[in-house]
Length: 108
Image (cartoon, rainbow, N blue to C red; front, side, top):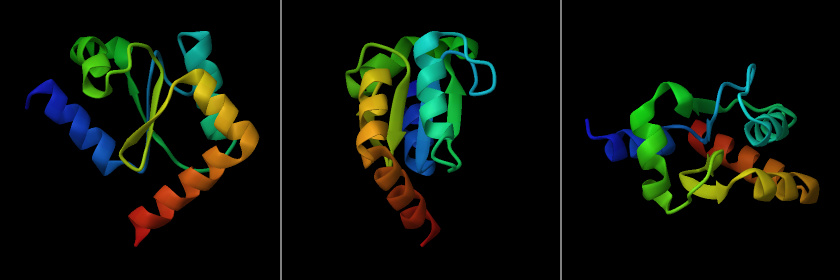
C-alpha cells in the first residue's frame, strides 16, 4: 500500500489520531509530549503513530495535509493542527467537544 493511502486509512479509521515523535507514554520531543498530554487529559481513547519508527510516514505526512511539522492531530478525519492549536483548543474547550463528538459518531 502506498504511504499516502496508508495515512488516509489511519486518519479515516480512527476518530482521533496523533502523529508524533515517540509514543504518548514515551514522547521524544516537547511538542509531541504536550500535545499527547492534552489528548490524554480528555480521558478519551486515541490512536497514535510514532513517526520516528516509520520513515515513510515521517517523510510523507507533511504532504498529506500540507502541514510541515509534527505532531499532527486528526479528529474525525480532519487535521486540527499541531501543538499550539491543540493546546489552544484544549483551553477553550473545543478540543474536548470535537473529540467526544468524533468518538460518538464512530460508535453509531
